[in-house]
Length: 145
Image (cartoon, rainbow, N blue to C red; front, side, top):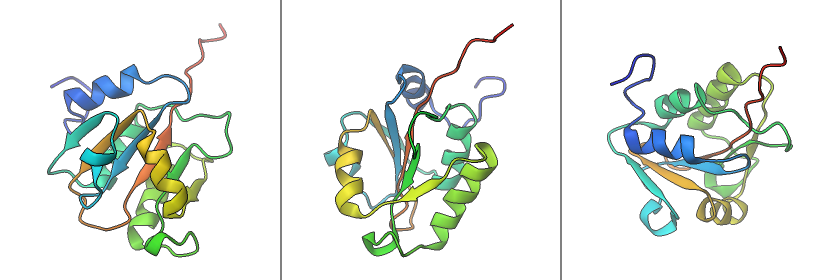
């Protein structure tokens, strides 16, 4: 346990977040996603739902301001025009933690190759299907003073 760090962020996940560089992507996937098969680096977050884990990660992860979309998510039935309730929850967390960052809905054909090339895949126990979100890490600039 650490002061100020949510216990939902385990040591492997904290290590992955710290090891990532600018432009690296981390993906939180639902319990149905074939994470073991698709991950370059896999972090297990068994027993945790996606939304609370996303909220904890976004407390510490700077998002990339140099791209149009630093947050991407899956779509209901792999159709970006369709949205499930979990997608509204994902968007609400992003809006609360990083106001002004749009969340891009993606079709599976675009999403899955990006997940496979991500720095880290975090396998949650989220029961809702299509509950996958990609976060692109930004930079923390030194103080101007």
